[in-house]
Structures are given as structure tokens and as C-alpha cells.
Length: 287
Image 1 (cartoon, one colour):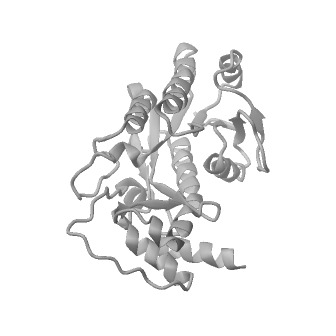
Image 2: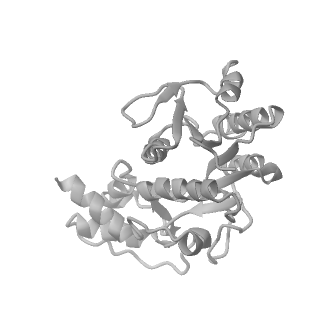
Image 3: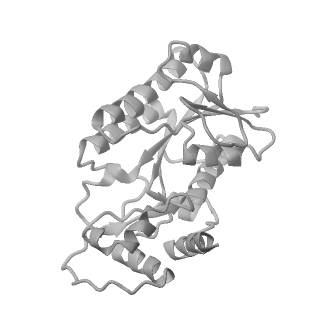
């Protein structure tokens, strides 16, 4: 039976959460609500000031009875205590509410390809590959992924490095050669593409409940590339000289791809490669 006016709640409305909500808001039949502890800035959908750990949050979720929850909350720091609280305790509170109240809500958890950081071979890692965390934060993200996908009721979006007009860390790094780390393989996704892919996947699942959706999906442009190639490309666009460094025997790092996004979703990327994305960003910076 078709759901009329499906409701989506986005828990955590930072840069990515807002972009996801703004895209959903363009679909008139969808009801979009965001929650954030301290909302700020403009958005095209209501963002409510709510703390997921507050006593009244459970009752509010039950009353709203959303069809979909996108869990996009992020910790205030990278220490393991904050990771545990936001990714594990926060997400578990959501899934416990759904289970105890027998809600039909589907949960989509925004994770990170940090869960693959322990990978030591150079074969590309796809949506279905086993995670290999090598630090406490990666292990915690892996634990949260298990909570999200328990009993096959939820899904995980693993994002590679997000970049965009408001995310210019790599441009600053390119300008400061002395800060360059050791060369490695890097993976990325333009922030607007990431948001559109996530919305596209949920829309497909909504329109066709039998749509075959993997439990875990890597959100990436599937173009792993050496860090120094990216940095020197940016330098060229900034009219800075190329940095020539001694080659190393073996470039390490993980290579991330998504067969689902690139072959089965038929998504048309705005920026299918870092060259396209950074060219636009640098052009906008120059205006």
C-alpha cells in the first residue's frame, strides 16, 4: 500500500543533513523535519531544537511516527567517548524506540569508510566487503553499523571524504607543502552528490519496497586516487608550481568503490571526479 505524505526525520542537521533535507523538501508529498541540539542558519525545512538524550525525545518520536529516520548526528570531537555517545548510544536509543513501540520506521545511518582503515591490501573495497577498523573510532562506527542493520531493518551509508564549496581543507593543504602527509590513496564524494545519492536511494526504496537495497552502501565517486595527484592538480588550478617529491616504493591507503551507486543506481554525478569538483570550487572562490 502506498504511503501518503511520508515523513522523514533527519537527526543531526549539519552541512550534509541540511543538504539532504533541502533536497527532500523539493518533493512536495514528503514531510521533512530536522532535529539538532542548537539549530542555526537557513534551511528549506523546519529544524527543531531537540536533544536526542532528553527524557521527552522518545515520546516525541512515537508521536511523530516517521516513515524514515536519517541518523546524521556527529560528535563534537573525535575522542572515543564522544563517538560512543553519539554513534552508539544515540543510534541505539532511536532503534530501541522503534523496536519497543513496534514502529514501521526505516533507519538510515550515516557512517564513514573509516571502518576500512585497517585494510592492508590495495584491492578496491566495495559495498559488501568486510570492515577492518584499526582504531577505537572505527570500531565504534562498526558497532553502530551493526545496531543500524540489526534484523535487516536498517541501512548504512558509508561516506568517503566529503568535499565542497564549504569544505576546502584539501585546498588549504595544497597551498602548504610543508604540511603534506605521506602520499596515500584517497577517496572522496562531492557534498551535493552525496546528499542527492542518499535521497535518490531512499526515494527508490519508498516507491518500490522490493527495490533491492544492500544493507551497506559506500557513498563515493568510485575514483580512488593518490593524494599527491589531487594536491598538485589543485596547485595547478591555483597557478602554483607543481611539487615534485621523491617517489615511494608503495603507495598505501584504501581504495573505495560502490558497485551499487555506479552500476545499479544509475545516478548521474554532478562531479564524477576530483578534477571536475575542484575546478568548480576554485572558480567560485575566485569570484
